[in-house]
Amino acid sequence: MSLSIYPAGSRDAAQSSASTTSATSATSADSAHVDLDALYDPPSEGIVKGVMSRLLPFHTAYLDVATFFCVATGNAQGLDASPRGGAPGFVKVLDEKTVVFADWPGNNRIASLRNLTEDDRIGMLFLFPGLEVFMRINGHARITVDPALLEHLKEGERTPKTAIVVSIDEVLFHCGKAINRAKLWRAESQLDRKAVPSMGDMKAALTGMDPARASEIDAGYYRAVRGDLY
Image 1 (tube, one colour):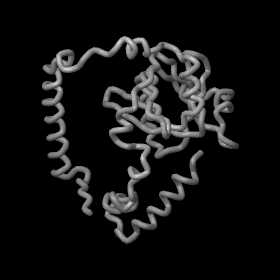
Image 2 (spheres, one colour):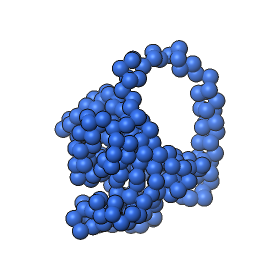
Image 3 (cartoon, one colour):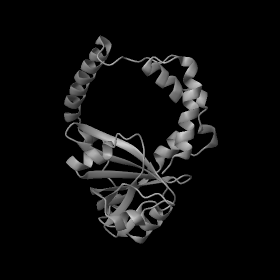
Image 4 (tube, one colour):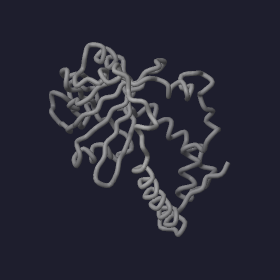
């Protein structure tokens, strides 16, 4: 299995970037001329009425069992999406218009936090293992270091450095067709680790490290992602 990497600053990397920019411009121009209303039926009345501006008891019931969501943020340079996970109910409901979640250690890019200092818009997409439905929250967010709130979000003896408070504009459920198209919850959908390059394989390729050290890197990676959670 091969892994193609363009070194930073190389001619191939520059050509790839230029091609991507050209393709993006062409795609944007094409999109502007697509008549979406002619291609798609309007949403049903039930779908429209299902978009709420505040949490109802059934939204809260789902948040109480939620263990994973993806968060989307952005700034003038572009967009970012990243995963968040925790014990059931790790996203706390403060009131019918507000939720909060802790920021725990990741790769220290802190792209979501940096984006929120420039643009406070946020999107949250929740997945519920075994269920065929998503829940989405769109709104505006702020970063807090309020001691009382951080104490409320502690995991064991660990206190987060920051938390994100989200003011809800929209909350809605989204059908689970994507889950079933992907057969996401089926046992046979679980990937064999050897089906794709491992983290060690990729790091060795990116850094020029001896490929024989890939298994050593993999072992360290799994120790960290399984043990250093908070």
